[in-house]
Amino acid sequence: MAITSAAGPDAAPAKQTLSSNYIDFTASATKGWAQQYLPDLMEKEAEIYGNRSISGFLSQVGAEEASQSDQVVWSEQGRLHLAYTATNETAEDANVWTIVNDVDGNSIGSEHGIRVGDQVLVAAAGQNKQFNGYVSAVSGASVTILSYTTQFFAFSDSAGAGAYSILVYGSEFGKGKDGRDAANAPQFKTQTNKHIILKDYYEVSGSDTSAVGWVEVTGEEGQSGYLWYLKAEGDTRARFADYLEMSMMESVKGVAGSSTADGSINGAAEDFGSEGLFAAITARGHVTDGLDSGTPATNFTEFDNILATFDKNGAIEENMLFLNRSTALKIDDMLGSINSAYATGSSYGVFSNSEDMALNLGFSGFRRGSYDFYKSDWKYLNDQGTRGFINTSNTNAIRGVIVPAGVSSVYDEQLGKNLTRPFLHVRYRSSETDDRKMKTWVTGSVGAQTSGKDVMEVHYLSERCLVTQGANNFMLIKG
Image: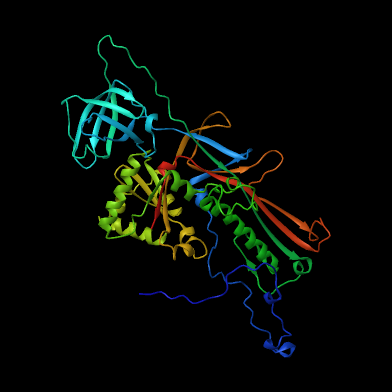
């Protein structure tokens, strides 16, 4: 079944008040003033798109906090245990491995933490073979491992650069032998982000502010009455408020030497842009193309692969899924394929275990394995005026995001102590002198006369950035 939509009215915002916004009884189309019958006017503007605002995501999963610096810097924990991938190049020297990457796939080489005396477990990918070994020598990225059970051991691809996994699980030293000759320092990971300045502007002439229209206007910002400029100013304000959240989702950092580095924003490319949520998850978190293809049984397999990924990271028990319509329906089908009464196993722990509270916030909960999930539609991904429009023509569209609930403990470089914060929070510039969270000011001749221009100018400004802590616990659903 195909759905065809009519072209409908032009929904694009106008830059200024126009004469076309008003009925002209002198025009020939209305028969001029010779029209002796008063038209039956329906004064109230029809709200054909419902509530058009898409903001609210960050208010549900994040927080806002003042900042007094150009840059936000924070550090995150490294992994506690030592695990690496390695290669074994020659069968003649089969007990020597070359360390390549850490457990997260980062190139590590000679910076690994394996030391002489370590007990390790060595496994070959796809061969169902492993052995317990003892580290007898370390030279840069090369590690000599002796087997506890056999002098030599043969993997089927020992002569090639096969994928091997090495896990340190302990150590052993002989009687009277010296101990460690080197120490492992914790891995220090620092993340940074910078603020961006957002601005908008609305202008209306002094004459038009005193012109009363025949349409009673209302809007998301609470404006109402028969002055059309109230509608236009309110829509500008609501659109700017949405931009404050959308920029925190979509922003990316500038790249030095990119074609956009023309100096029109703020100098060199690395000086503009900011890391939004999608960019942070792509760079430091996980991306999946599952959950939207195949049968419900296939979706459960894909979903369990997601759980396995979370097991390898923070294993945050409670997570929120913000999804577009098609993915949300797929998950409903997935749950329904198990048991039509599966809702009896739902969990609402993050909402004080109140089903009513969860449903009032638009969430439905379910449990899989040791994880609780709270599912909600994300209007930003569905609205035809926002991501919904981009997603219709993009095979690599964003269809949802999995966000951990709760808080994380991080070390704040500016304050010099550990703080507990939501995984997501917005930093906005503020001090005793100026609060730039959301500034609005009016200039011109209307109201308080501040200039010689016979206009009312409304200015909007905000300076902010998003801090995504523990992005390894987030997942982006694409495809």
